[in-house]
Amino acid sequence: MKIFIDTANLKEIKKAKALGLVDGVTTNPTLLAREEEDPETLIRKISSEVKGPINVEVTGITYEEILKEAKILTTWGEEIVIKIPVNEEGLRAVKTLSQEGIKTNVTLIFSPSQAILAAKAGATYICPFLGRLDDISFNGLELIRQIREIYQNYNEFQTKIIVASVRHPLHVIEAAKMGAEIVTVPPAILEQMVKHPLTDRGISQFLEDARKIREKR
Ligand code: E4P
Image (cartoon, rainbow, N blue to C red; front, side, top):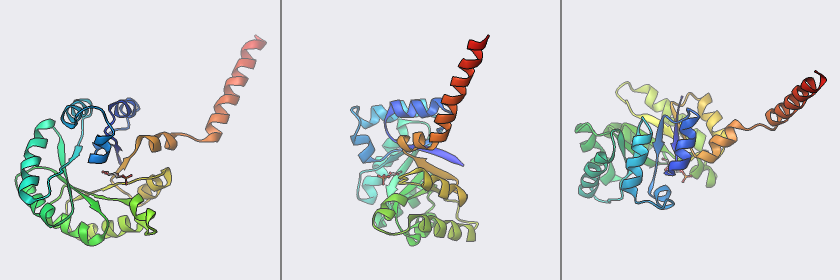
């Protein structure tokens, strides 16, 4: 299972990388807006830090705007993946870009029908948004399950699913139980995944007992 880190914060990316936990990075305009640096400088820094796909989202709306922007974004690093929201203009752009060998990620996927069209357009990745569906009382994990089932029915669908909008460690566990290839995880959730109160208590006790042994000698 690959873990991408869902942030544009270089410090957090470096921290997760030091743990050996970063196979790629996903960003979006909201994540980039939280940072001080301008997007190009930041994405260039992230690209030189991480070996793996760096997902950067277009903000253009029309087919022409998306294509133009995508061509610029690909120059920001060696493994830039162009994130494109799913709609008619976006799907047209994905088709053209994939024919030109440019990697794409169709984002804001909330239904299996959108996932089918993204795969037909030749998307390299899709991002179904788990947490945002859960937020409105739909079962996000059920969406992932259905997309996986559909993609497995067709050899010609090479699109990989990036489980996105992850809100807690259980999302990661459930996605892993389904055999998800890639999950993009916010840094805070990576930290939660490491933690267990019994581990902390166990470490304290072992350290205390080790101290007692040293004092006896
Ligand atoms: C990832 O590519 C998405 O942009 C991200 O996971 C969205 O997460 P959110 O729903 O927490 O904003």
